[in-house]
Length: 245
Image 1 (cartoon, rainbow, N blue to C red):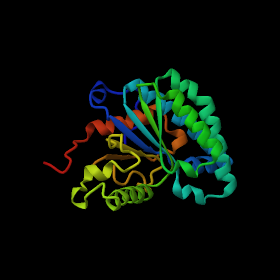
Image 2: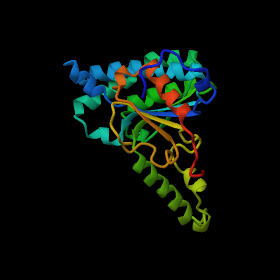
Image 3: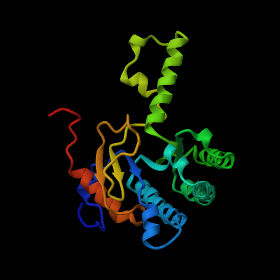
């Protein structure tokens, strides 16, 4: 990608993605490069999230999905997971008033029941507080895994077949999609991955079939408005064919 853009071009503003998803990678490396504890990388990453959420809302983007905590992240050291959960509670307490002021709604995708009760409690409070807003919908992927989501959807479909509520012959892509965590959301138009890793890391595997991918070498704590503009400019340059000519 080009050097960071100070402004978003008028042309790019006319073709903004409706739904942007971001794999926020690089917090640990950012901290390690500065000889800081990993949690400091997560704190710096939270500031990037704050800026990108605000910018997306100001631009009129309707949906922003942030990959905040994966099912694989449960395998990290317990003290790091505990610190992340405490910081998530702190983030929800401090940021919900700002999100409310900016007309942001909040949704969660993932196995929310696996999160600590205190985290669940604050997530539900924030979701309720923001439920009447109609600007940007912020989707936080927490305890999320793309394969886990698909398996959960298969279970839901199988249960309906077992109970005689659904004929196997009537299972279509649309029917299946209605059993995913994202059943009420459009598929992402743009997926941004920070830190230069060339993989999708078990994120929205069903939903990104025709999503435009933009990978930046920038570590997530350094990903701010200018880098976001760069990704949107790159999206504008793409020609989306969806398998056609």
